[in-house]
Image (cartoon, rainbow, N blue to C red; front, side):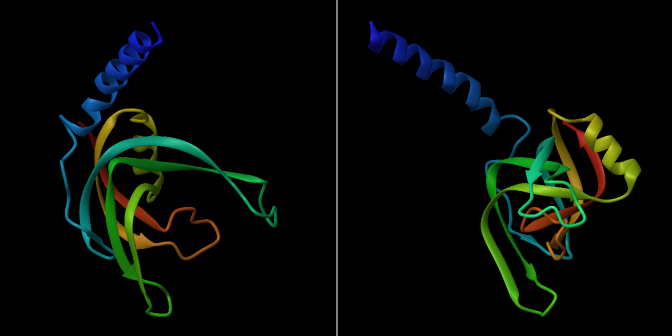
Length: 140
């Protein structure tokens, strides 16, 4: 009986997760390079990041993020010119003009394609290794 329930759960999980790798999302993508425009697909969501201190801020910070179904590779240079390379990112904090970010928020929970420039994190307000500077967003 436990085996039958376990099998049912596995079938259900497979059915739920298989659309994430099909349909609007690509099987693979080229590496993202800082300063270059890219089209990235995923799901937009709001998230609350815990902070290590509350200097000038609360103990948490909310932000808009893009969650990708497959890990993406990202590369760029930090402020000192050192190369930064992240081979398996699935979470990108979004930045940009208020109107574009409002459109991203309105599409929260839905598959989207974002056109953006990749930027390495470089301030205490950046919560992911790389950010997407959003130029446009469209629902898929």
